[in-house]
Amino acid sequence: MVTTSAFLFVMLIGVPIGLCLMLVSMVYILDTGNILLFESLPVQLFGGVDNYGLISIPLFVLIGEVMNGGGITRRIIDMTMAFIGAMRGGLAYVNLFANMFVSSILGSATAQVAIMAQMMVPEMEKKGYDKTFAAGLTAYAGMLGPIIPPSIMFVVYSVLAQVPVADMLMAGMIPGILLTLIFCIVIALMGFVYDYPRGEQWTLRERGKIVLNALPTLSIPIIIVGSILAGIANPTEAAAVGVVAAFVVGRYWIGDLSYSDVPKMLLKSGIYSAVVLFLVAAAAVFSWVLVYGMVPQKVAAWVQTVASDPITFMLLVNIILLVIGTVIDGAPGLIMTVPILLPIATEVYGIDPIHFGVVVVVNLVLGFLTPPVGLCFFVASAVTGAKPGKMFLVTLPFFVASCVLLVLLSIFPQLSTYFAG
Image (cartoon, rainbow, N blue to C red; front, side):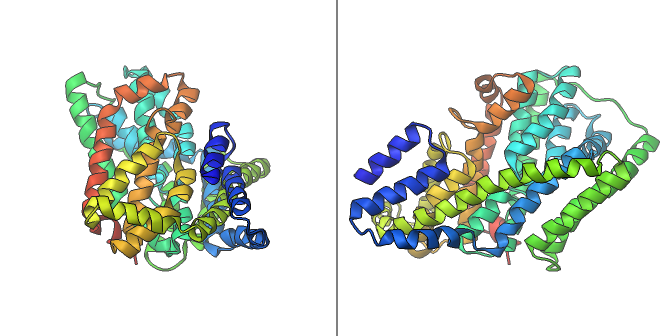
C-alpha cells in the first residue's frame, strides 16, 4: 500500500519516469524493512545496461540526426512524390510512404514526426489539404518509426525480455507493411469522400533524374535491414555501418552535410540516448523489485480468472495497454508493463515472447496518438500549429484501422514471428 501510494504520488507531481521507478523501488525496500537489498541496487542498476545490444540505440539515433542534417529525407520525399504524387490524394500517400522509407532508417516516432511535419504539412496545405488532417496523418505515419526495423522500442523490449535483438527487429517488418497498406485503404476511402486533390504529373525523364539523385539514400535502409536479415551483421554492427553510409551520402553525394555539423549531432544523439538508457537501467531495478514482491504471480492469478486462453489474454492485454497508453507513452510504458505481463504471457499461456513484444510495442506506439497525452500529436502541433484534439478527431479512421491491426496481430502470431529467427 505504501509503495503504491508513493508510485501514484511521484507520477502525479510529474517526476520523470526513470526517477519515478528508482524512487518507488527504494520506497519498497524501506517498506519491507530489508535494508540489505540496498546493497544489490547498484548491481541491478548497472546490470540493466550491461548489454551489447543497447549500443545500437545511440547509433540508430545518430543515423537519424545525420539523415536529417544531410538532406536525405528531402530526397526520399521527392522520389516518393515522383511515383505516386499524381494519384488522387497523392500527397497523402507520399506522406505515408516517405514515412515508411524514413522509418527504415530512423526508428523513433517523435523524431520522425518532427522531421516529416516540417516538410510535408506545408506542402500538403499549399495543395489544398486541410492543415489539421495533414498534421494528423503525419503523426499516424510516424507510428511506423518504432515498428519497421530498426526500432529503438524493439531494442529496449529485447533487453527487458532477454530475446535476440535481431529477431525482435525483424519481427516488425510484416506488421509495419500491413499498417502501411491499411492506412492506404483509409486514405483511398477518405479521398473518395472528401475529394482529395491530385498532384502534378511527372515525365519519365523527370522521374529518372529524381530516382538517380535519391538512389544512394536507399543504400542506407538496405545496408541496415539487409545485413541483419541476411545474417551478415548483428543490429549493432549494422547500425554502425549505417551511420557511416548516412554520413557518406549526406556529405559526398548530396553535399548538405559538413564536418562542423558532427559535434552538434553527436551531442543531441548522446542526450537522447542517455535518457533512454537511464530508463532501461531504472527498469532493471523496478523489475527486480517486482519479482521480489511476487507481483507477476499475483497478477497472473487474477488474469487466469478472466482469460481462459491465449487469444482472450492477448485481447485483454490490448485493452489494458490502450488504457495505459492514454497517459504513459512508449518506452516508459514498455518498462512498466513488460516485467509484469511477459512472465504471465510466456509461462501461463505459452505465448511466444517475440509475438507478445510486437503486440505490446504496437499498442504503446498507438499511445503516442491517444489523448490526453498523444505525444505525436503535440509534436506535430508544435511544428505546424494545428490543434492536437482536432487532429485526433479528423484522423479517427486511422485509429480504428490501427486497432484492427492489433486484433490481427493478437490472433495470428505468424504475422510477428515469420521473419524472427
